[in-house]
Length: 310
Image (cartoon, rainbow, N blue to C red):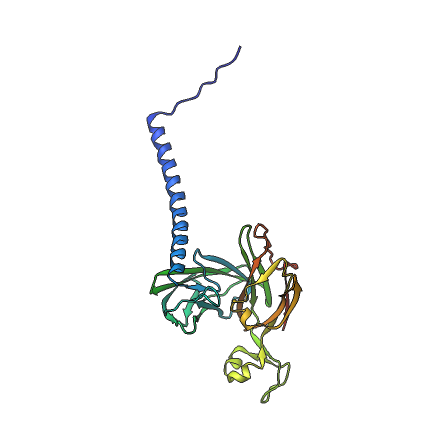
């Protein structure tokens, strides 16, 4: 004999609670998805108006960076490069005015070299530097967060942002590959916490191999600064798997660029760039297969091999 299963009905109060819960959940998902779609539509509209407001670190949907190996004692500098182009042929033909907003942890003081600025149409680039200065003693594992937002105010309004988490740890150079499945590109983030520059070409009373503090370096003339380097970074990769964004600000400063021939075309497979002391750099690579995830914490060689020289 089969046993009947009774399904307990909800009373009127329980039904109201259930429908309120479902309604709130639907509203939350709808608002989040709606904002995502709205920003996508705005970006499409801006492109039809020949309006480009982009950055090497800030993005339309916000990006989270985790920068390890900060010494927790000296100020940390984040250089934000802005541009008004999509590629060499698609550029904004009007000046773009913007404002900068900072939101930082209570244990640091954040300053920017610009509260506002203009990306002029004849150059299509501009930049500002955010400096994070500790206000207390930190220990290994402690962290701080700085959120940076750039908002265009004319001729159109668009917002770019990113959050930077600095973790106190060992001293030196580190890198990570930031990626996710179905992303069309990945980013190689390199962090330099060295607090000195090394002379690579003798000048004045300085000899090759001699080290200068950041303060000493900043007092040099521009021509003498070019004879010093804090760290040189070399990236090697297989261009049949990933290829570098040659409009990247970091790549535009590259040297010792090498290529290999594939299917009758020359593709870049290796290049080197210099880094300032206490700074970070981002290099974007496009993926041939977006479905793959090449994330790496830098503890071993990833799809892009990173070598340090300092």
